[in-house]
Every structure is written in C-alpha cells, then in structure tokens.
Amino acid sequence: MATLAPLPLSPNTADVVSAVRALVPELREAQAESDKLARPPEHIVAKLREAGAYRLTIPKEYGGLGADMKTWMQTVTEIGRGDAGVAWAVTLVASCNWALSSFFPKHVVNEVFSKPGASVAGIFTGRALTARPVEGGIHIEKGMWFFNSGVYEAGWDLLGVPMYDDKGEETGPGIALVPMSEVKLLNDWNTSGIRGSGSTNVSAENLFIPHDRIIPLEPMAEGSQPRTYEGPAPRVAFMPLMANILTYPLLGASLHMIERFMETLPRRDIKLTPYTKAAEAPVTHLQIGEATAKIETARLLIEDGVREMDEWSRTSEYMPMMLRAKIRRDTAFAERLMWEGVDILATASGGSFSWLSNVANRLWQDVKVGTMHPLVSVPSNFELYGRMAAGVEPPLMLV
Image (cartoon, rainbow, N blue to C red; front, side):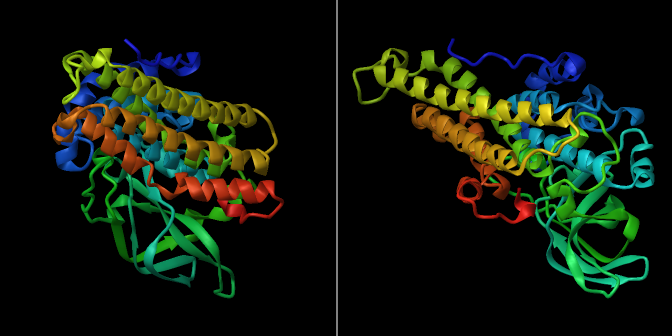
C-alpha cells in the first residue's frame, strides 16, 4: 500500500505521541458527533487529557510535559489523523498554554497552572472592541473576538486588547488573560470543515482587566519580551511557531486522505472508460504519485521548520528575522501543497466522493478550511519573505 511512513517518535516524550496514536480509531468514530456538536465531544476531550495532549506545553513544575516542537508536531499530527478539527483545538490550546507560561508574570502563571487540568484558549485580535484605560488596568465596554478555537476545553482566555501609556494614549496591541467565566461563548461555529475545533466567536461586556494580566504583543513577536520559563519550547520565536503549528492538524488529515484513498482503491472503477479497476489505470498511478509527492514535500518543509525552531530554542539568541520569514514562507507553501495533494486524490475518487457521508469528503473540507487561516496565507507569506529578500523592511510584528 502506498502510504507515508509514521513519524518517528521523539524519545523524551514518546508516551503522549503513542497515547494519542492509539486514540485515532476513537477519534474517527466520534467525528460525526464532533461535527454535530461543532466542538470536541466530552469523552474525546477526557481521553486526550488523560493522554497528555492538553499538557504538551505547560511547564513541568505544574505537571505539564514541557515538550519540544517535534513532540508538539507529532502529537497533533496523530490527532489530526483521527479528526483534524479536534486536533486544531488541541494545537491552539497548546499555543495559548505556551504563550501564557512563556511571557506572563510568574504569579499569573502560578494562578492559572497551579490548578490541575487548567488550560488556556485565545484569539489575539478583537473586533468591534470598545475599551479605555482606567486605574490599574483597562475597561472593556464591549468587544467580540472571532474564531476562538479550543475555548470549550479551557478555563481561561487570551484576548487581543489595546494597550495604553500613562497619558491614556494607545501604544499598540496587547494580549489579556481573562477568566472564561467572564467571556460569553456565542456558539456560532458552523462551517464546512474543522468543525470539531469548536472555534466559536466570543464576546465580553463591562470587563475590567488588571495591568498584570496584559502583555504587549509586539515585543513577543520581535523577541524582546522577557521569558518566564526557559524550557525547550518557551525560547522558540513567536510568529514562526504560531504559523507552523497550524499545519499539524492538516498534515494528519492529509495522511489520512492517502490512507483512505489506498484502502478504497481496489473497489473502484473509472466510469465511461475501459478501466474496470481504477488501480490498473495509468492516470491513477500518476495521481497517486503527484499527490503523495506534494504531501510528503509538505511534511518535509514542516519538519524542517520544527527542526530549526527546536535548534534555536537551545541557544541564547533569538532566531534571525530572515529565518523566521523563511519558516513562515515554507509553512504557507506546505499548506498549499497539502491542499493540492488532497484535492488530486479527491478528483480521483469518483462521483461517490460528493456524498457528505464520504470520509474523504470530510478530509477534503477539513484541509481546505484549515488553509484559510490568515497566518498561513500563501500570498501574504510569499510577499513577506520576498520583500525582506529584496531589502525592504517588514513590519516587525509580522515576523
């Protein structure tokens, strides 16, 4: 069977990867339920918590795994082989757990992670947001934040807010930590793919946020924000990490698409042609060859970015800007390649592919929706890298 080899395990945290790999059949069986709920089913969340998926990036002193990027990738990719939407929620929660423990004051980190089972979701840009500076912090009169992935599994939310100086002038974007009890979930996630992520919009009104629960976004991106913890992942550059982690659920779905195509191939013919067995048709061979080449190339690009991030996390220097832009470029290109590979296999699947009950149709939808995140936009990331290569300074926060 022409399928891609499993990812080799990272020896230091192989248990979590093995544990979620064993859950793949259950994730697939529960996907209809996650689609109906538009969020991960509770029994799946419980299994993933037990496996350690929600503790990936929490520091070890709080019972977390303190995992490196390779383990993060392997874990989420395996979950994505079962349900890309659920994997999307896991990788976004992992990123917010990472951001909180990496950049927020130690006493704030203690407040959140001293409670067993705590996890954090977040969305770093707001919409229709009305805020003002007040003594000791900021006051949110009202605001909305779109696509808050993983919010149903979290007790805290990281929300994009404005920051102000002593004169009350806005100084730039910040990220605020808010108890989930003060956030309203709008339960409006109704999409054609990645449904299991539960990426609902959220809102808040009449909300006070103290200064010590707000950190500036730009220094996080440029590498000047002080780090709270110095484990493997905390030293990784912010923007490459935030983009690269979005590929892991889609890589899992793409690998599942190959697996599914090869499993069903012996039962297919090609209508209105002499081929009663699609597996014997040269056009099928060409499609398999091209699709798997694209998906395998995507995986290599993703893994190369993971390797670079892990290697730089072991140094005292912040990753150079051009390398950060290269990882962003390669991440976006990997997303395009995965979509193209999955789409080729969908085209080769015949008319039965159009049934909504067809597993391949679901995978196709998941990968397409996942590629629409602005952080992995191909034109934007190509332009970013190209302008830097041409000697034109980019906005720092984008790199």
